[in-house]
Image 1 (cartoon, rainbow, N blue to C red):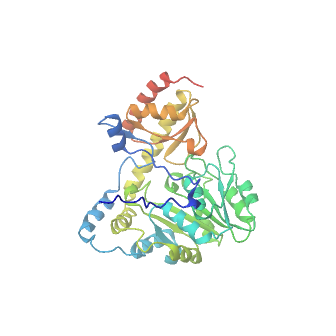
Image 2 (cartoon, rainbow, N blue to C red; image 1 turned 180 degrees about the horizontal axis):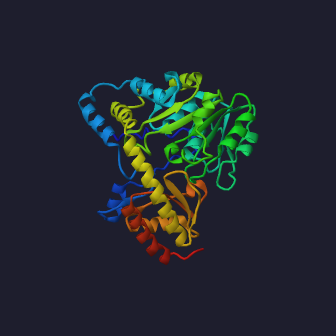
Image 3 (spheres, helix red, strand yellow; image 1 turned 120 degrees about the vertical axis):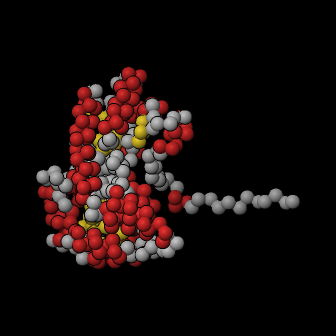
Length: 374
């Protein structure tokens, strides 16, 4: 038998040097690698209360119909979102999580030679999506770990099509106030679409100076707002996000959107979750109390904590964050290292349930004794 010749096709040259999104370690991975049965995950900003019970029931009832293709346009969910948000149905589209919508924006708006302005420590998926499209990510340093909107506006030129702002930002948790966004939009060059990623909107909305991106859309500003069911609603595994923008922007996204980019279970679960006000209220209340507790405990251990409007904290360890991360893994606690954001001494820690925070703090006390402050 003749040997098969190697006919593998090398990776395309245009992918060289691009980074890719690295998700947090899974519970199963740590269990397997460390030989542990009990693992706590505080790495991916998930809802510690789990999914909405109403959403679970809706998904169960839909299981018998999964041999059918989903509604590609997500018509029923889009209509409910539009009514709930006070916008037109043609101002809403769905995504396979909000990260899918980031990709769609890059595909729809960036031609060769165009660019997008992004904060250096803004959500990594912004630059990854843009650079994989046309290597047009134009990075701007943050100021005090927060988007410097004036510097970002100044970085725009005649080929800038998108300006991304995560508000609040992942992984820092910091945010831009309404007056800052007003100032940005009042002087924004023509032809630039501001993308407001509001994945953590529900956790932030009670802060007095935190702006609701939909208000900018209502007055005709060139803004697209991205939100998700992954956080407050606890549906991360079903991957449902949505964008709200002018009809022309939504039409552009729908032009490049995959025909069935959201599934039936996710659409129906999200539709039901919108009515589970009690679950969302409990989730937000738990986050408020446990975030305050976690911040106080971390500060009491001599660590630095950035202000956060999300369901996570960005923590200055004052020592090698990657080493602390690895030692915590050995104790069965998963957090998120931030070397990819050029924050090598920081960790991002999700706000968990009380018992999960207890476990984190006990492990952290052991690890901090092993690793002296730099």
